[in-house]
Image 1 (cartoon, rainbow, N blue to C red):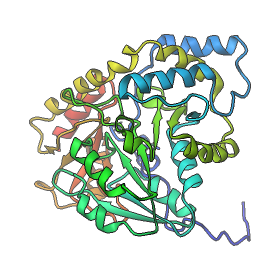
Image 2 (cartoon, rainbow, N blue to C red):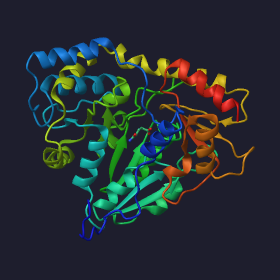
Image 3 (tube, helix red, strand yellow):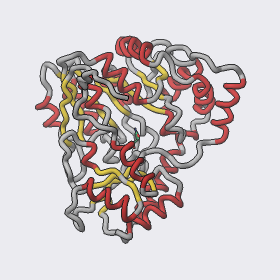
Image 4 (cartoon, rainbow, N blue to C red):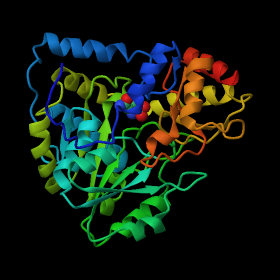
Length: 384
Ligand code: GLN
């Protein structure tokens, strides 16, 4: 339809997200999709049955704005058992309509126009646009190659009186690195005696490998007191399309976040909340995830052993980075296009996770796929 209206975009340089672009190309070329961090296998049948049962039981109207009480209780219990801190279920735990909503509500509630928000690149692609929509300034700090660690001296130097928030993400999408004790200590030191809020994206909290411990901000009292922790059921229960997540934060911060959440979504999907409350009563449902995905990581890495790619270590998340620079000078985007067209396998160019398009000759592979898909994907990648 024609419209003569002047659009005046708030995000003139932002296009469609890379995940949608690549998924479309993959479908067009009938390529196998190792790009999106979304499982291609079924969730637990009990979970589906519990959602259906909740619907049959009449739980089909708005849930309470903050989430159903049994789910908030189960979440507070889980966080306390795993990370040792008790969040108050009535004022400090909120069920949200996806971690994406949690990120948006948190940034929108706490970041004012003119503020600065530090985050690390490569990063998930929504952080910076959300900050910009508040009239605030995203301040990207590049993770240092070759191992994508945070350079805390740089963070220290980037902090100004306008810094309102630091966004962290562990396990990290897209680099598959995880925070170490040293990162927690430095983060504490750089934020001490400031009003900086830490927004901690922990959606891969249960997907961490080789026996490592997930360093949630909740593990440390001093960090927890200034942190909003956002997590998701989508990753932990193989249901990324259900769009239910949760966040925990000290009451004063949560108060503000709820003011935005109530007008953006009001509440998250009701029947799913009943099913997740039941699922959380079985801790092995999430405690087994690390081993489950480690097997997938190893299967893919082994199958790529004889390929020309150099694989970077994956410490957590659904992802693994693969370097192709030694055998091709193409840009990572061109390389990814060629993989889709010629090898019929879709991946994500790492440059898509940088605002300045930094290209280090790396692609992101997702191993949140059934074993047959991983083996076939690897076979195709080996043909390059
Ligand atoms: N978090 C997932 C990824 O990084 C998918 C995000 C999306 O498709 N919007 O692949």
